[in-house]
Length: 73
Image 1 (cartoon, rainbow, N blue to C red):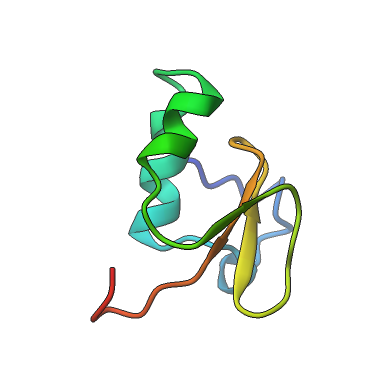
Image 2: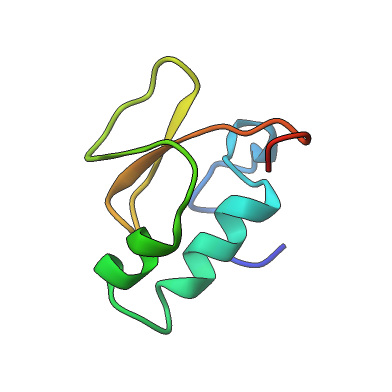
């Protein structure tokens, strides 16, 4: 998996925000500024760390993104 490191995450992939959306966001920020990557995120997002109500923090971009079901992704 792109961007996955068992050492960094204690080998617990089930606890990672590892959907395709999060993988793509992490890859984008490698090729553009954090602000440019944030502007590409169309789903619900909050600048900073929020981990309730379905939000997962993406440190590489500095935003928390609300999880999306397959129908809305």
